[in-house]
Image (cartoon, rainbow, N blue to C red):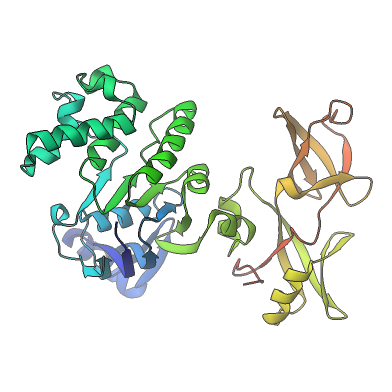
Length: 393
């Protein structure tokens, strides 16, 4: 229903007058400094900086990152609940920086459901339409259509207190979609649900986006939600965009160490290694184990004129293989996960996680067992030791 463009968006929370006076001297001595999740300047606390994103019509975009990274602040700026310090927000090509939230044709689903406790489900869903003076028969049609889509028709006469968490979230989503907004904003809508309900509601949201013609912007700290829901994922850290791409792109080609460590479960293994260029080819050396990188990685490294250097090597747990030779490791924990076994081991002082398929005849690993693992050149990621940047990009 709408395209959304964020151009050089910034959000700064100004220092209050009292704090400004107290810290004026320190600010003069050190005008800009970094703190965990915050950039403090003379201007104030920088929550979002230089955010650029073009969202296509009907696209499902997920903003993901750790707490305090600026994803919810960005969503609230799109909604009009936060002022934009700098940059431009355009919806369907129209500048929205100073447009009131009610005039942006957006709907928002909150983490806390935000339902009116004294109203029935029907009344909650109909409320915004009544405020717009929509005819009663049209309100009834839209509410019942939304209730049918979300399978909550049988709850229309109940009040929120009589519903489960998952049912309340369906009502909150229903209240948003009855308005047929151009843009649907969702701020961690599943975080209050238990694991089983989260899985069920994720599936419902996937079905929903194919049944309504709306552009979605979804915020979460859960990478599983991001990977399963998003057409594209925007990974954020400390108010800055780290990478934008499809779920497969950010999984297979992480732009830096942060993205590599944030996306994927269990997390990627990291090692101190050496990248060597010999006879026009690139190799990674991890201890006594050497692997030649695959053709695609060779081309990208050559294009960037990457030289031999110490690197941080990244290998995902599912890409390791146990064999008779390779990198030696000692098993510390063996976790049976049904169809696979997760092995936690120590390799020359590095913690390593390996995922191996379960086989009752072969997977009798115990604490203290010595094993060897290998990995292929197609799954090895090499990162600059100082900047953390993926050397292929």
